[in-house]
Image 1 (cartoon, rainbow, N blue to C red):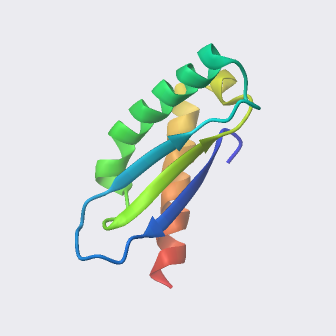
Image 2 (spheres, rainbow, N blue to C red; image 1 turned 90 degrees about the vertical axis):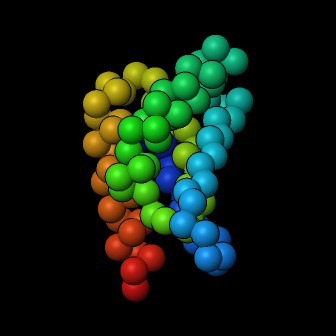
Amino acid sequence: MPGFVLLVRPRGDDADALGIGYTVSKKVGNAVTRNRMKRRFRELARAALPESGIAGADHVLIGRPGANDIEFAALGEQLDSALKRAAKKLAR
């Protein structure tokens, strides 16, 4: 996805809880830019993971440069698409 990279890894335990993490490196921008991106990621995850997240897995969103310039709705669509692709890969 242009705004972020989504990593999903099953934990292997019997818990159905979803784990979430956010990473935005200094390559993306200064502290203000990185914090804004993390706030946007938190809100995206809060909205999308309860419905589309993979139970018993850890999810990590890694920010890419320029993600703050993408509209919030477009980022939400990208996250939904990425979660569907991850679920399909894990189902194999």
